[in-house]
Amino acid sequence: MTRKKPYDFIVVGAGIVGLATAYKLQKKFPDSAIAILEKEERIGKHQTGRNSGVIHSGIYYKPGSYKALNCKNGREQLVDFAREYGVNHDISPTGFPLPCFWI
Ligand SMILES: Cc1cc2nc3c(=O)[nH]c(=O)nc-3n(C[C@H](O)[C@H](O)[C@H](O)COP(=O)(O)OP(=O)(O)OC[C@H]3O[C@@H](n4cnc5c(N)ncnc54)[C@H](O)[C@@H]3O)c2cc1C
Image (tube, rainbow, N blue to C red):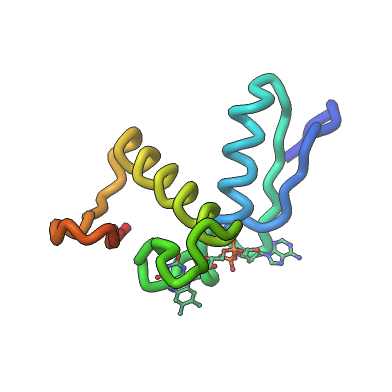
């Protein structure tokens, strides 16, 4: 691919972290040019494509801690994203606040 203008952002690695970072950058700076560099021939080939598919709810972290809040925030954003884009997932119907995500 040839591009004469410089990129505003370059993200290295097309796993969930790289793709989510690029997604958020695009939302925040819609006119920016973003490149994602991936060494494999397709995205999500490593950890992202091989995990258990369960979103961590954050209950094992100290209540109110940064980790717990970050986990809760991420879970909520993931549920919203899945609903908005029709990503197949399931949330445990037990009433216990442990959403199980099978993506
Ligand atoms: C067995 C297993 C089960 C898991 N289960 C869960 C779970 O149930 N729930 C959960 O939330 N998390 C789970 N995780 C953790 C979660 O999958 C990872 O935290 C997450 O996928 C990491 O994403 P990442 O983008 O950082 O890494 P990766 O998905 O590994 O992506 C990194 C990308 O960078 C690319 N890359 C590396 N070096 C370069 C380079 N020099 N140039 C260009 N590209 C490069 C790689 O090819 C790869 O595509 C699990 C992990 C494992 C291994």
